Amino acid sequence: MTIALFDVQCGFGGAAPGSREPLSAAALLAEMDGAGVERALARAVPAALEIDISWSNRHLFAACAGHPRLVPCPIVAPNSARDLAPEHLQLSEVISQGAGAVSIRPRQDTWSLAPWCCDRLFTAMQTRRLPVLCQLGELSYDDVAALAERYPTLPLVIIGADYRSQRILLPLLEAFATIYLSIGSNYIVQGGIEQCVETVGARRLLFGTGFPEVDMPAHIAQLMYADIADDEKRLIGAGNLDRLLQGVQR
Image (cartoon, rainbow, N blue to C red; front, side):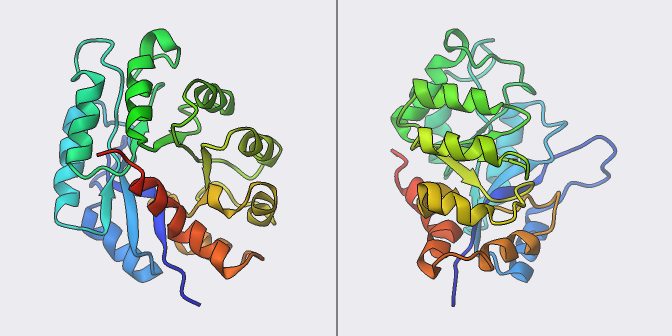
């Protein structure tokens, strides 16, 4: 059985307090080679010191440019402080640079998820059908649900769900057809993949790892040993993310 793997939850190059040297794109690719992961949606991680959004995105694009297996996932934010490009121009730029999705960090970048602050950004992302990575800790489950209600055709990808969240995740996935779940760190749930597939189908799950915070093999094993059909594993492994990226309006 061959299952192509496209990692929605990994990255390189970010800075953290006390870190001596950022992980390089080459190091990420070496990990992918060792684990058998074909492609990755790459963010700047860890991002604790990634304060200048424009600078961080430029470095991400440059690092991914020579590696077609790495699809950049840059940061976007509302232009509410007039320090960034207007929202629609931000999206035009990142898409022109090959972005397949974007990441939002409302807490770290200090902006509100209320419509009066960010409606232009989310309306532009919805128009483009650009998947949005929603890192728990930056957003709550209630935040994600509120966004799904306001922007009903915008794909929202939850990353960082933990093993205690199943009682929230299942009804959330049932309620909103545009919310997707990464099965990367910290989502290690006994029978969790099977339960999600039984509840909403395999098309709503995306393979992820959480590298470099965690190693890739554990989350690969979680998918490979799940008691679901091979065709469902193929959808989760790469097919669903490919479909979302193909839907981006370029």
